[in-house]
Length: 324
Image (spheres, rainbow, N blue to C red):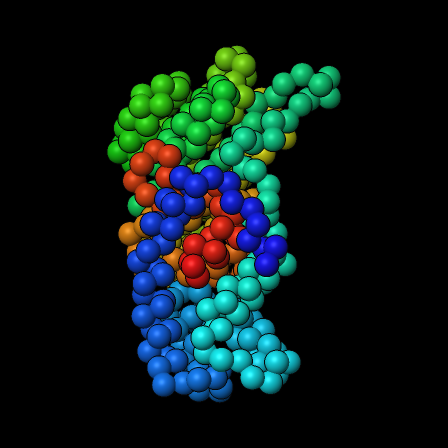
């Protein structure tokens, strides 16, 4: 089908295939048991498939949508063999995701740099949110590397000031990628650090400013107030900052990633998602559910340890790798 016409590069696709190996093996082991001894897709096969999709962290709501689509195919075609189930799943999930705004064919490898009213350059300000341990700092470092590789100048802001290790870890990435980082002492006001970082980025004529924010999931009101303050002070320097609020989720946590997404999207305006650590888990199906359930684009997925292994998410490639 035309769904699968777009493949960016052989190396990227091979990394994606390898990164999804555990998820794929887990899914197809269950699927092969579900259809054992069956020649056609019947109610029992569909019930088993529903259970497999839910247990693969696709999520209940998205699973029900997929089952409904396959039931429609069974009704329309009258007879569907179990040997066709893989192909049907591949097509229907890709079709489902094509109806959301997640993972469109947009190339997120280079951010769309804004310009002010006079047409001169304004830095692209990216604010990154997410709890501790999801791979937030690593994602920031890998994004800085990718942007710099594209010829863009990058400045980092260490506004996660509640944990000394967060500042130190971001500094390691700043040194590794060789980009400047703006920081203050642990316990400093995050908004103050964000202000300094954006101001420094403007002075340095940077293309991209990436602001790390607090990795604590405190109550919704506190989180909202803190992130609102960070946004407000940045806008004193760049009026329409931030241009993107990226929520980083750990794909290996499965349904917990859904819960974090719900809490953060309720507390602040999240405009994009990154799902990390997919290479070390059998829960890769979570990307399908998150892509479907949240009307927010999944821009990046982490499928390996290397600095190059944070990939721009393309739903067609993902489904192709998962069901190949």
